[in-house]
Image (tube, rainbow over all chains, first blue to last red; front, top):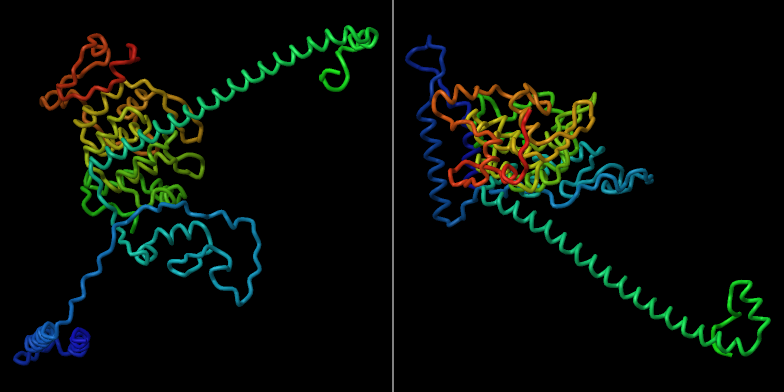
Length: 219
Length: 213
């Protein structure tokens, strides 16, 4: 309250700050009105002292975070090629264009939207100043190391996956081989049995290129 | 606001470092989506992530002068003005050739003649292929040593006018610089120790000898 009082006072005083020199009426230059200034200074000082006595906490200067990189990809194309009906009653967030939920505003095209979210106003609403952190050599080195590690891990994962796949394939091959063997055995047994049973059928089958109809089960 | 040079940056050649890139190229970069989407709020450390993803070198291309990601990141570096140690780290790294190319380019733009000779000349032993896009938008494969050589010989590289460089023998006369080390000599005697403080990339040691044209 004290502060606003002072500023009010200042505005009122604005007109009286300058005063023509009374001693020399021909001098057109403005002169500082020292008395007036002293009054203002005194009033401010008193207000400050009064505030301190009351124990009001001083308002800290607004401190904003340093600028951060966006950790998400800006979605510019999800609504592309879609038509929406807009009435008078539709909220602005659902009307056409890009809606910024931080600043509650709609921007009409992608370039302007990018400009908006990179702009001072938007960043201030997010609580960030436009200053970028100054990174040190160690940070850069760490970043390089991190990227290298990531790459290596990716390689390892890839290797592991491949190995698992190879192992599975090998297993399947072995299984198939065993199956084939079993089938072969069965067929041999069948053939020996069929030879005894019926000659002409088998001959026909041999000509056609198969050894029997239906299942390979023993009859 | 976001596109201002950092306040603690030093002037280079009595100019705002960003102005090393011509005004028209600058405005193209500032208006492109890569800049707006990806380059916002980067620090020198985060710049590494972006630089690793680079796949080619280039300036602006096409009749409408579209900027490549390479030149965008170079402008970002000019904006941030990272310390010299960080640039040297960029140049020294062996894994990512485009990060190295970017570091070298930045060093050529902002560094003194002495630093350029000291840090860039050893890179002429790096014979890896790099992809470069010319102003018509066509891709071409050159080697890293060719790129570095162009930085010394050409007036303009990647749509940026390169600042003039003092001749090496002028620096030699003032005993400011060590005598030239020829790659071919280094290759001859394999047992080099880098304890002299001079940086020699491992490419120089590992690769087979090749006579430069």
